[in-house]
Every structure is written in structure tokens, then in C-alpha cells.
Image (cartoon, rainbow, N blue to C red; front, side, top):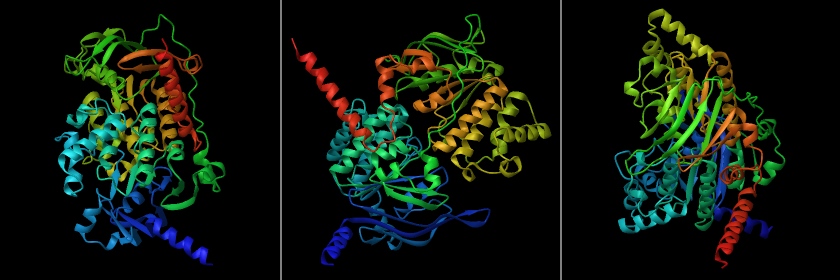
Amino acid sequence: MKQHLLTKINAMKQRLLTMENIHIQGKSDEQWVDIIKGVDLYLNRGEVLGLIGESGAGKSTLGLAAMGFCRDGCVISEGSVHFDGKDLLALSREDIRQLRGNRIAYVAQSAAASFNPAHKLIDQFCEAPHLHNVMGRKESEAYARKLYKRINLPSPETFGLRYPHEVSGGQLQRAMTAMALSCRPDLIIFDEPTTALDVTTQIEVLAAIKDIVKEFNTAAIYISHDLAVVAQMADRIQVLLKGEEVEQAPTKLMLKAPKKAYTKSLWAVREHARIEQPAPKKTDTPVISIRQVTAGYTSQQDVLKNVSFDIHKKRTIAVVGESGSGKSTAARVVTGLLPPRQGSIVFDGAELPADYQKRSRDQLRQIQMIYQMADTALNPKLRIRDLIARPASMYLGLSGRALDERVRALLAMIELEPDQYIDRLPSELSGGQKQRIGIARAIAAEPSFIICDEVTSALDQLVAEEILKLLDRLQSELALSYMFITHDLATVRAIADRVVVMKDGAVVEQDGKSKLFKPPHHPYTELLLSSVPEMDAEWLDRLLIARTKKRAKKRGRKAKP
């Protein structure tokens, strides 16, 4: 009895966060609806809890509630949130302000929407330590450089002198992770922190997060739809569905023997896999041909170096590589947003003007884009009918009843009920629904070629699979060609006919999907393939040990005379 009491006391000393019977409501059409329905959550010091579930499950809403925070239009209607013995829901605004950013930090999914574009990264890093009197400016800058180096950001001594728009999306996501650590908090909420990262960078960031959490005994809530990633990070996993807890258990037990049917469905391997189309004939004219393109954002540095590949009718080319490899820059060149210094873009046998401003309206119509972050790609003030109608009006000259009928037909085409969605705002849609609107907006112009820039990376596995199926069906029905930019090799297997692998601005390998994924691989392709997380809680540790041994062996060979 005495030992049991001591155990309970010790557990209470270690308890950092306790959330009991949390009910959160949001207002929709002037009515309050339940978002979180009586969920309990607890977290001990130094423990990492993985929160998983499909889009709309309430993961981010519950994570924000752990800070005593709700988004606009939402309210914690019932329950309690205690952090280190303090009732967050009863604290004054000033007291809770002192906690947030200092003892409780948040890493958002969309780094691009979270940074102030008018200030340098180092200034934004140093803001929280200064406001909370944690450390002075010089000490903050030194700590920033230390963290930048630790999470493998380029040129860590000068990286912070850049503005947010001057770094890649993956680099910006890592910079936000460093910023969250600036005050050495007791609790960090990681909301999909590696969604925008390629697999090799993701490994480095996951390893850094894991080390820092362990070193500083920091507790963390790790929100993700990537189950394999959660398996590497979490001590315990809690599954949510439509605002309710499905089950929770230690990670290894959850991976080995999930109890509920819903959890088992999340664990299941995704089934969608596009049948690889046969290689086109040599006499077939490509829809898009990128010919020996060299390009960069300054005159001193080339981001693309003599890049060439073709995309044929009704084919999907997946362009893969690390953050900064040149994938998105290649897309900018194709769209005419970045004229190349050398080389050309050929559309259906005719060379396109390098600058989009010099292209005809029909040339602009033929090439459309679907963006990674639907949250930032859709104007939040426009209703769905206006978002989809604009390209149909601008490129096809539709108006009045004909335009309305076209918008409704497009909504039906992307499997959204027109009467239910046509007058909604983007804020009233889920992540997957927003991405469907992005797809409808792209096909509204009746293009022949679409660039898909990481279109499933922000979506959970179930929703992502539905989006891939939709793109596959539209390609068949509308004779579309896709350039699919992605860092997710599972997506490549599901959607691609041919794969182009890029590194440091150059194409290192390109081939049909079936051939490229079979050994022997180019060393860089092998690195990408080996970096894809597996559903094994010890996979990351084994990989890091193996790579450390490999580097040591390589250094040993170089040291020999």
C-alpha cells in the first residue's frame, strides 16, 4: 500500500499536462457544433505523445487547447487544462502570455504562413527570448546559430540573416522548429512539423527533435498523419476520430496490436497504385520538353544546371529530391515565372517564350498549377463559386448562366455536391476539400498540362489517397499530363509513370517507375529510398546507427595512406 502511494506521488510529480473532459465547440451557420467531445489527455515531463487521426479528427484543435488556446469561432465549453499545476483556463491574459512561447511552444504546419516576411529569421528567433527575459540578444544569436547547425541548416553562421522568402520551404520549417526551442520550453506542440520536408531532411529534423527532447527533458505533443513518423517519435499514441478518442497505448503495443477497427484501417497499407503506362514512342511529341535548362535567382548562383526531361500526353512524371534540389525552381521555369539563363521550354513542339508575360493567353491556359498549401493558395475572402469561376471566365470567356453551370459541373467532377459547397468560404472546408477546390480551379481553364506541387503532403493518408485517385481519374477523362513534384516516395509509387531524381539542381537519374525502384540504384536514389520511415518504433535509431558506422568506415578508408 505504501509503495503504491509513493508510486502515485512520483507520477504526480512527473505530470506536466492534464486535460480532462475537454469539450470544444465551433460556430457554423450560426449554430454551435461539437469539435472535441469529452477527450482526456495527459503528458509527463520528457514524454512524447503522438496524436493521430484523419483530417478533421480534432488533432490540431486539441493540441492548441493544450496551450489554453482556441481558434477564432471556437470555445472550450467544458473541461479543464492544467499545466504544471496551473489552470490555464483560469489564468489572466498576461499570465498565459508569459507561458506561451516561453514554457509552452508551438511549431505550426505551414511555416510560410507563420513567419513575418518583413523581418530576418534571426530577428524573429531572438524575439521570444528577449520578451520573456530568458537571454540577451548576443546569447540568443549564438544559441540560434547552434540550433541552426544542429538541425543541419546551410551556412548556420549566416542563415539567420536571410528573409523567409529567401529559403526553401523545408529550410523554413526547420527554422521554425529552432525558433520554438529558443526559450528551452517545458512543452512543445509539434503540429505536422515535417510535412514540408523531403525524406532525407526529415530524418535529420526528427533526430534533432528527439535528441533535444531527451536532453532538456522536454515534453511534446506530436501531431501527424504520417504514422511511420509518429512511431519514431512517440512514447505513447492517442488516436482521434471526429473529436473523440478511439484508443491509446504505448507506441510499440499500438503498432503491434491496435484494438479498434478504425486504428487498423489507419495502419493498413494504402492500396492505390497507378498502372505504369508504356514508354512513349520516340516519334511521339512531348507535351512539355525541358531542354538543357540552367536558371537561378541571382546572377552568381545556378539553381538548375543543364536540366532536361520530357513529359508526354496522359503521362505523369514525378520529380523527386531533397529540399533545395531544384524541383520547384524547375516548375517556375516551366510556368514562365523564372526565365532561364540557358535552355528552353517547348510545348507541343513549339518553343514557349521564357517570360510568362510574353506568352499568349492560350499558352498560359494550357499550363496550370495545383499548390501544396491550399490554405494559402485560396483567397479566404472569396466564395468557392468565385474561386473556380475566375479561370473559366478569363480563359474561356464564360459568363452568366453558362459560367454558373460550368462551376457546378466542375464541383461535381471533383466529387463535391454543388448546392452544398458553391457558396462556402475556404475556411468552411476541410484540408482535403480545399485541395479539391484547388484541383477544380486548375482544370477550369481546360489545360493539357498541370504541375502538382506537393499536393498531398499536407493531407492524412486516407484523404491523400482519395486525392490521388481523383487526379488519376481526371487524367484519364481529360487527357491531362502531370508534373508531380513530391518528396513522398510512396506517392511516387502510387501516381507516377516515370521518375526524375534531382540533386543540387541537376538530374542524377531518370527512368520508368518500375525500373528506377529496382536495384542497382544511383547512390543518391538509394539514400532517398533508405530514408523512408517504416512502421517500426526502432527504425530511426537503427538507421542513424547504421549511417554513423558507414561514415566512420568511410573516414577510416580515407585516412589510410
